[in-house]
Image (cartoon, rainbow, N blue to C red; front, side, top):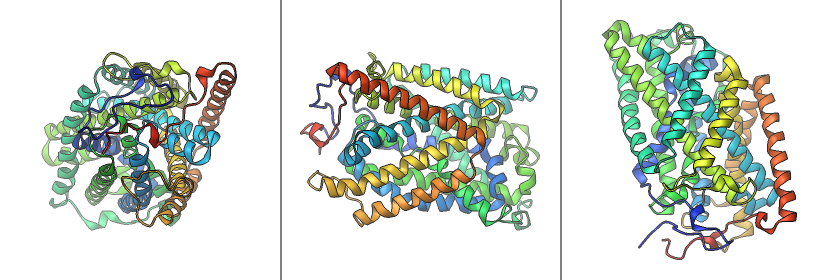
Length: 468
């Protein structure tokens, strides 16, 4: 008996708009791990600039802080297993306007994360190929080209993209765990390099914890792909938890291994860290292999963000809060128009961010992620009160108390990220909100004139009766 939805029965949705269940639990786990852990190599210098060696504890802290949030997500995705999850949760919990705002924050999050990963992946191409004469502008243009390449890949069956993701994540995990394990066994590794541990003070460390919410972004791809998962809804919470634990502990271990090898001042000045540490120890060949693994890891993250973001657009288009043309699904069963729309916006974002793409887009996506987690966590508690009758295949521990705890944690994370946001990140935030408000106003106007534009709100009644 099928255990995933293969149709949505209500609201006059057409079968051609729906995404089919094709992705198993292990592939979904690797998809999430790839998104979370993919960009570690080009971002390592930036992380050490935030708080020095103590950044390893920041990864463990953000992993711990994300657990209550994941519990709320587990209940919500099992109850409402539809693409664009957070927008669906908030719409049912708090109404039309909050639902739209949550969905738009989610779109902003994935657009900024995808735009960030384009140049980050290009940076790995530059380092791997020894193209050090390339300017930052040239790296940005290469990043746009890579986003276009991933968009092209994703216009075909999700199964193809998922297989590629699986292989690249396997490589990522081998190198990610193997490299620090090797470093700590060498004579060069010393605890002396871990001082000063809190290089920017406790205030800097708390800001780092907030900013590193970006480094758990990826578990939330599972709600976006819920319609495409072919395993029981009640197990999705385990997939999310495993993805975060595997990735964040690996991040902490990598930072520990690198920090003992070289001073933080040296690490923060590199383009990539682990391959440059390995070069004098084992030669150029090993460094090149590590760079190739870092490139593969970046591609997994870019691919995953592209997939998740396009699914959010489909969901909001299907709900008639974005133009309906974005809900189109091609003959391969993938949302091709949403994918290419994502590419266009990401190219513009890379152009706007210019040479400051890392700080501007990375921190902007962290802020969006914190806001989405806040609204989703609050929705879990509100739906417990407003719809206690709805079936919940998975129930979060502590009930509404877990929702309150997760909401408080999300507020803390958002406040810390806000303290570290540069002016350009705030400018992009304001511009994107203004664009979203214009689109939302247009869709509301169309709904008054044309009944086919009336907003679609999905509930558990829209899940087919054969779901376990």
